[in-house]
Structure formats: structure tokens, C-alpha cells
Length: 337
Image (cartoon, rainbow, N blue to C red; front, side):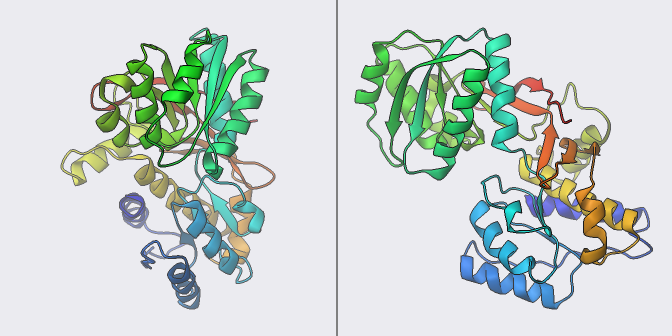
């Protein structure tokens, strides 16, 4: 999907005359999600003197590639990695993803102001760095928005029996569950909640964003909420976003683009604009312009790189499960300054 979005961007750029008089071309290196293969592929792309590397959507592989790109002075822009420790690798490393540190506080504010939540139960998947990190972000955001954590429970990945945890929650009064793990456990946890007669809704991060959530969870996850960096909001989409959705549908049998396709598109466009601004496709030259990106309008929203080259993105898409689908519940703006 990332590649589909990238290819659309390349076509758009080339149809408009390319960059600085040159046509763009995508050189594909496939690592089959294997870390050592990713290292080989990255090395090969650098040897081929590409102008930039866009990848990988996962945090682990991105780190592997980044450690090779940084000393080689090759710009790497991930269109999916959200974990910590990416841009810290060096000043050639970027990403255009919605960070949990940006999204979770915005969603928490929405819970407090729009849904009037005052008390929550917090459920963490222990031993899962994604979940533990997100729990810490939510913990701080909940405190800042005056929402009290009245109960905390831990689960493990691959657990299927949550009766003890839910029994403990049943003793408490709260407005909803903040769940920081992945969709499989999220679905099963909510089924146990319903089994024990608890009617609360669950809210979490994009770790819940998978059709498995509603396929497994069924009735138990209806109304469950999660955030994402991009979603198709056909009624309200405007400008570049609307054009992107229409063009994608036309090329893909009317299917909607997902977050990765949109972020892949923006990744190529961000790089192209930096190359144009610097009048060079040499990473050592244009990377400074890339770092200075401010209020850049992409199909996923506005992107500003902060002083650490981390993307501050607006808006956050708050999704809810409706039937066998995710629907946009709210589009939450972020203060990017």
C-alpha cells in the first residue's frame, strides 16, 4: 500500500515535469520483512545512488536501514514507523507518521471535553514496548485533562482469557477503558467485558486499527474508538486529500486508500518539495530544506518538522467501529506550533 501511494506521487510529479528538470523513478528493494535482508537492500540502494529512500512502514526495519543510511549520508523517510528511537539515529532520518505523543493527548482532550469522561480504567499489554510506551503517554495526558485512572490491569500478548482482569474492573465505577495494546487482545478483552455485563467503550491507538478488531470482537467492539493519521472522510474531504482519494479509487477498483498509501504519497511529495526548494536531489544538500518543513499541506493533513525533525501532524482522525467497518467519528485538530 505504501508503494501504491508512492507510485501515484511519482506519476503526479512526472506529469508536472519532474523535479528540477529530472523525472522521478522508484527503485524497489524488497527485504521480505527480514532485518539482515533489509540491511543488504539498503546498502544496494545507496550504491545505486538513489536520491532518497522511503521506507519501511515498521519501526524495527526502519531502525536497521537508518543505521546504514545515516553514515552514508542518505535521506531515509519512513511512511509508517511510529516507535521511539528513529530520528535520534541522525539528521538524515525522517518520518511522516502521526506520533502517539501527538495523537494520544489530542484524543484524551476529546474524551474529556466532548465525551465528558472523568474516570477510566487503563489496560496495558505488559512486555509489548508499543503498549507500555502508549500507556505512559496516555497516563500523562489523562492527568493533564483531569481524567482519573481508577483501575489498572495488565495483560500479555497472546492471552485469551481476561476474566480475572475484567472481574477486577467490575468492582470500579468508570466511564471507559483506555486500552493501549493490539486489536486481537482488544477484541477478546471487550468480549469478556460484555460477557460480564459491562457496557463501557474502549479507546486506544492505531494498534487497534485492523479488521481483526471487528471480525473477532463483533458486537462487543461496536463503538470502540481508536486514532489514525489518515482516514477517508468522504463527506468532508477537501483539496489535495479529496483529489488523492478520488484518484486512488479510480486506479484501485473503487477501493479506499489506507493510511499507508496516503503516507507513502506524502513521503514522496515531501522529498520532492525539499529537492525543488534546494534545487538539488543530493541528500546532503536538500536535507536542510526537508528539516525546515513547516505547515506543509499533504493528503494526510498538515506536517511541520519540529527541532528534532519529528513530524507534528494535524489533524488526528478518531475512528469508531460501526458494523464491520471503521467510520470517522471526529477529526481532531492539533496545534502544530
